[in-house]
Every structure is written in C-alpha cells, then in structure tokens.
Amino acid sequence: MRVGFWNPYLASLGGGEKYLLTIAEEAVAGDHDVVMLAAEEPAPGAWGRLGISIAPGSFEWIRAADEAELTERSRELDLLVVTTHDVPPRSEAARSVAMIQFPARDRRRLRDRVAGAVGATRAPAALASYDRFLCNSQFTRSHIAARLGVDATILPPPVDIPAEEPAEKAREIVTVGRFFRGWHDKRHDVLIDAMRPVGDAHLHVVGGLDANDPGAAEHLAALRARAEGLPVTFHVDAPRDELLSLYRRAALYWHAAGYEADARRHPERMEHFGITTVEAMAHGTVPLAFAGGGQREIVEDGVTGVLWTGPAELVAHSAELLDDEGRRAAMGRAARDAARAYGRDRFGERVRTEVLRSGG
Image 1 (cartoon, one colour):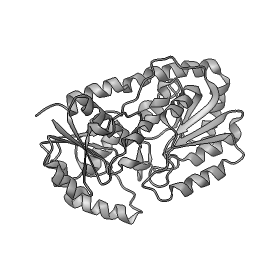
Image 2 (cartoon, helix red, strand yellow):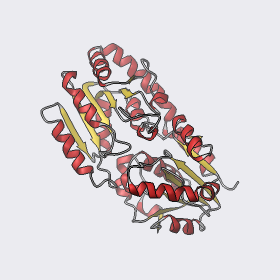
Image 3 (spheres, helix red, strand yellow):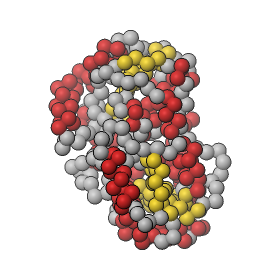
C-alpha cells in the first residue's frame, strides 16, 4: 500500500510531528511504500529527538510546496495521513485520515485570519474528502465537533514506557516544551518565577527553538535573563538521551501551558493533551500541571499528580512533595501505572488496525 504523510510544520519537531512520524514508523515497519510530502526535504536524522527512528532510504520524498500541490499528489496514494491545526487540505487519495491537533488559529495574526477565511470556504469539500478524523483527547474532540462539525476518534499520542523501574529521584524538577510565544505559549516564565520560593531544588527547562517562530530566539534570551541567579538550567535542542536522563532523575514535572488564558474564548491556549506530562509520569516523575485542557484527562489530582490553578499552589504542593519522599514515591508509582495506558504498543496496535488497514 502506498501511504503518504503530510504535516506543514514537520521541521518544528513537536507533539504533532511525533504523532505523525510514529504512524509513519509503523507504516515503514509494515513494509508499506511510504511517501513524505513536504515543501523541503525531510531530515530524518533530527527525528531522534522525538524518539523516532526512520532510515533515510526507507521512504520517498515528494515535494508538495502548498496545499494545492498536496491535493494533486494525493491522487497517487492508497492512503493519505495528515496532521493539521485546522481544516485539512482536500484529499484525492483512495482513503484519507486527518489528525486534527486543535481547530483554531491565532486571529490576531493576519496570516492566520487569511488562512482561516480560506479554510472556511473550502471546508465542506475538504472535510468530506476524509474517511476518518483522529484527535488526542476528549477536550480536543469536543472543540472539533463544535468548530468543524465532524466527529473525531480519540487516539492519544504514544509514549515510550521504560522497562526499568524508576531510579532514585533527586531534588530536581523538569519541564519540557518548545520556546515560542503566541497562542500555545508553554509559560516558562511562570515556572521560572516559581523557583524563587521553592527552596533547594533545581529546575531543568528543556525545549527546542520553534522553526516557525522568528521571535523564538529572542524569547529564549528573555527567559534566560529572567532565570539569572536562580537554580535553573536550560537544555536547548537536547538530544533524546539527555531528556530521558532528566526524566529519570527528576522528582517533579512542571507544566504551565494555559495559565491566565480564557478557556472559553481561547481554548486553543490550553494544553490539548500533554505528551511530555505522560512521558514524565512513565518515569515515575510526579506531574504538577495547570488545571486546564487535556491535562485534566491525564492527571488524577492527588493520586497521580497535582492540578494547580495558581503559582502559589504550584509552589506549595511542590515543596510538600519534595520534603515528603514517601508520598511523592507513592504518587510516582501511581503516575507510572497510569502512563501505561498511553504506551507505544497500544498506539501501534490501533494504528495498524484503524489507520493502516487495507481497503474499506
């Protein structure tokens, strides 16, 4: 079966890219004829940061500079799989699957307003050209139904569950998220400020520079300045092994996306799922996540982690867990058990039966 994959932000290497590339990895393993459709030649060597291993010679690259070209190229495919933040491009493949990360754009930006207007005019035909829609959480599914009028199947992103038991934890905290501003800001600033009253702990801030945000480098510089004098270390574009080492060592995982955002007017600013939260949980690291969006579906407050609504709560609960090793360890075990539901093996099985199936 000839299977094509498309993501307009493939170079960003975020959660949506990992989702698509994991499906592509399954397609390669299943001996399908895999095609990457992209404006620029893909760089599989960089995909290791996401835990993806696809050999350069195991797929074909076909240039698709824009959505019109993608539609034309899709005629050659038995299956097209895309990830998108909005209405997907119209497909003419024999079968088509779209994973919608979240159906929203930043209306403050001219290019997104224009793209939204264009999307609205082509939405009926484009949506009708897909056989199945996927999403990452019930939170996202409800907004897809409300904004696009289609029903999506929840297929949470995959997480690698380590075989070994969690290592002894240090008084360290880790947070993971790309450095960029705008509608999905990870609010690193809130977490950096929270380190002042926490005490003798160390915060590791892991993330990459968003290739699609020209202001990302400036934003990172501002965060570094904000953290000056605090026990904060930045790990920019860290290799996968370094990230896994931090997950293994850290006692706590912090997440602040969605804080101070209006969830009713701007639900896109919430965390739509929270793959790094689950990755941390898989290593027995206790998550303390802002109580919004898909994080509510992942973290059981007081059992597998903590859901906070303000920095004072984050600081207080963090200090308690750092000082109470027994309670933290129990929550870490519960978090690890809960993370198994999102394991790569389960994701792969559903991909093979629901996405990469032949015909129908």
